[in-house]
Image 1 (cartoon, rainbow, N blue to C red):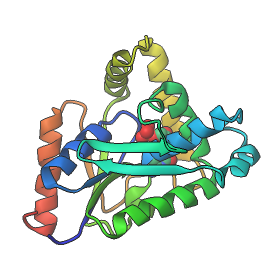
Image 2 (image 1 turned 90 degrees about the horizontal axis):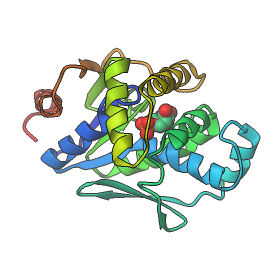
Image 3 (image 1 turned 90 degrees about the vertical axis):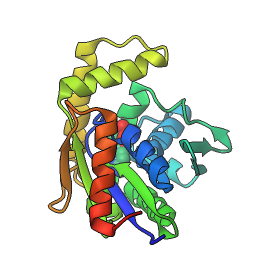
Image 4 (image 1 turned 135 degrees about the vertical axis):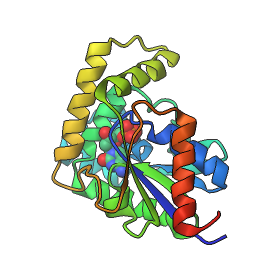
Length: 225
Ligand code: DC
C-alpha cells in the first residue's frame, strides 16, 4: 500500500476525532490525535503547579515532559512518565489549558516534530488545528471540518456527561467560542482553512456519512486504498 496522509483540521467539537478514528479503522492506517499532545503538556504543567498561561513556567517544564504516544487499533493512548493519562486529559479545564499552551511557539515546534515523526514511516490520519497548513503540508488529503457552535456544544455536553461532568449548555457554548477565538487568532499556526482543504460542514451530517465522504475523497485522490 502506498504511504499517504490525511490531514483533518477544524474547531473544537466539530467531530474530527470520532470521524478520524473511524476512517483509520476502515483504511487500516494510524490515527494521530494531536490535540491530546497539547492536552498532555497542559496536564503536566497543571500537575506541577504551573499555569498554562505562564509562558516562562511552561517553557521551563518542557524539557522534563516525558510524553509517549501509542497508536492502537481503537485510537491512541498517551502516557506521561509511563502513566496512562488518555482519559484524564478529556476535561474542559485541560482543553482550555491546551489551547493556552498551544499559543507558545516552542511548544508547537516540539509537538509538531513529534507529529511529523509519527507520519514519517506510516500512513496516517492526523487531526488538529494546523495539520494541513503546517505539520503535514504535503498531505495527499486535507479536510476542514466545521459545525455550528450550538451543535458542537451539544456534542461536547454528551461527551462530558458520559465522564460524570454536569455541564451547563450556555457555559459550554461560551467556552467553545472562547477556544475558537484563541485557536484562530494566535500568532503561531492559527486554525485556518487551507486553500487546498475540502470544507465539510458536519452540523446536520451523521458520523457515518462524514466517514464515507472522507473515504471517497481519499480514494478520488490516491486511488483505492
Ligand atoms: O482537539 P482538542 O480539543 O483536543 O485540542 C485541544 C487544544 O489544543 C486546542 O484548543 C488547540 C490546541 N491544538 C493546537 O493548537 N494544534 C493542534 N494541532 C491540536 C490542538
